[in-house]
Structures are given as C-alpha cells and as structure tokens.
Image (cartoon, rainbow, N blue to C red; front, side, top):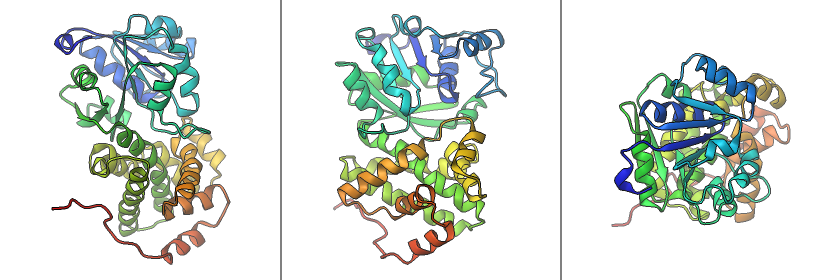
Length: 343
C-alpha cells in the first residue's frame, strides 16, 4: 500500500479483544475502512457481532456495526493492509508467530505497552523476530480506551523508522477527536509506554495512603527522571520523554482512576494482596509484569532507579509501604534535570 492510496478504504485487522483494540477498531470502521477484530473467544466475537458492544471490556459503549469480530486468526488477517496487535505482552509472541509467512505485505503496528519475560524484548522486537522483513511500528500515548469511546479529544504517537507506515496510520486513525503524531524514535516511544506503568502503580499506592498533591507531583516528575535515565542507557532519545509517549502517558496513567495500573496500586495501598487486586481488575496490569524485569535490568546496567527499587521491595519482597517510602526519602539526593540541550 502506497501513501497515494491511504485516503481510500483499507482492510484492517485488529488482533485482541480488549478495550484499546476495540477503540481503534471503532475509529477505523467509522472512517469507512474494512475492519476485522480477532478475539480468542468465539462466544465474545458472536456476542459483539450481535449486540455491537464489547460487553467484557467496554460495556457502556456501542461500537460500529461495521466491525466484524472473528475468532479465526487466519480469516482476520487475510489480505490485511494494516494490522494492529493489541495482545498482552505475555501472550504477544505466541500470537505473532502465527502471522509468519501470512502477512508479508502488511504494515504491523504494536499497541502493547510491556516487556517480554526472559528476553527483555519490546513488542516491536518480537515483530521483527517473528515476521522477518515486516514493516513495523508502535502506537503509544495517553490513550484511555473509555475516554476514546466517549469521544474525548485524545492524541497518540505512531513511531517507526518507516515514514510511509506513519503516514498510513495517521490517515487511518485521524479524526475530530483522535489526533496521531509521528516519531522516528520507535524504541523510546515503546519503552516509555512500558516503563510508565510501574509509576502508575506507585501513584495508586500514594493516593490510597492519603499522600498529598506535593507527593504525587514529586513521584511523577522523579518517575519521569528515572524513565528517561533508564531509556537513554538503553539507547532511546531523551527528548522523546518530553512528548505524548513520555510525560503525556505518564501523567494520565498516574492521575486517572481509569488506569489499570493505578487501580492495582490503589488496591495495594488499601491493604489488598496483589492477587486480589488483579482479580478485581479482570484485565492485565502490565506494570506488575514489567516491574521485576526493569529492576533487574537496571541493576545489571547500574542505573539508579529508587522508585522502582522501592516498589519492588513492597510488591515482591513484602516490605512495609511506609517504611520503604521513608527509606527512599533518606537516599542520596541527585540533580533535578539530567538532560539538557547544549547551546
């Protein structure tokens, strides 16, 4: 597909039956594109085709009647021009490997904000490994699915080294309530989306414990410092973290009770166990999966991440929350801003 025909109808496959995948499918279908949404559950797909509601994840909203929900992956991806992969990180590779040899000409975009256990691969790394030669991108930003479905003005970032891919995604998704910006720093955009989930858990904890606005402001800004410090060590552009996929996504995830990771942290702050918090949520909170991976990688690289260390001590080691926060405040004081533009 060339940039000259992106204004025409495309065939789009959305892999995943969750809330964000459904929101993207709804936007594309309402813009006149052919949209197939793959769901593991045949029952879920049949129900959505009948009621035009994703009852499990977005029960309050109707979706476009033009979305075809399908439980057969091969049918969903057949002749697709553009594929959005909205699968939780722990299942991402097992689904993507089924695309090998079947989507050679398609543009493939991950919307998953996570890191793979065992490899520390980001989702676009997996796409490159499992679909050799694929044209790959990542979509990330402050994008709460329920607000998108409510037509709240929202912006996101499509990141890829492939300018044409970025242009196609912008044309497919751009509408009066959803704006799509582009970025070439695919790694930074994707890493920002994965890292911010950790700090959303911390923000939920702080809110549940009755900590003040000063505290939340400190956690968000110091979290941004940690994120960018780690990401730059991994090869990302620090300026990416001043944009939608960095500070933008961090703010909404740390401040909104619609955020899955915030809600897990809030439940922990109320004294519930991690298992209870995740069971109540009913969806994947990627920050829990990402926490141990980032903490271990930071120790290997020698990256200073006291908030990550503190949350790890609370969740994984069962340390007292107030004791950990008190210890964090007594640690060595670092500089406020670590990256600057040289004149």
